[in-house]
Image (cartoon, rainbow, N blue to C red; front, side, top):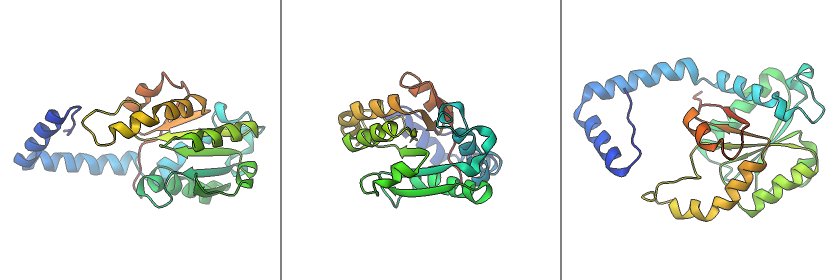
Length: 212
């Protein structure tokens, strides 16, 4: 059982069915618990990130797969330092990965980070938002020979008009398209999102959200 909709009326209809049907609510809840325990654990997400960090698009910096994850130095630059999606998508899984395999993880704001951090890192991870500062950071990282991963959890390239963030995402679209196109790899939450972004970049990895 699923609750989904792509338009405002379809969401209202789905919510009304959910409110009226306690069995449906129970089925969705039970399915969610089974899915999380099976496929959305922190360890599984950390393993998926490890696969990305050792993937061919990110190994042209001289570190081979045989040298292991312990060689990796990862810089995460987030649009907001204290927010749940940053922890769920990137910080918690990568710190879990670091505890198991070694390597180093540094986390800063994309708008306020020590300049020498880009020189230190092997891989730069950016998340979700893009603007002139983000594009400048990506370009600098590439000039330094670093590899860039762009993580995104929504189809921000095609936000429905009825959502309040539509105008914001429309104004930022040129920057987001540039970031997606110039990244060495993209990480996404769902296969549907992957399909929606392949026109920007073919190197896309699936990392579903996890729950510790």
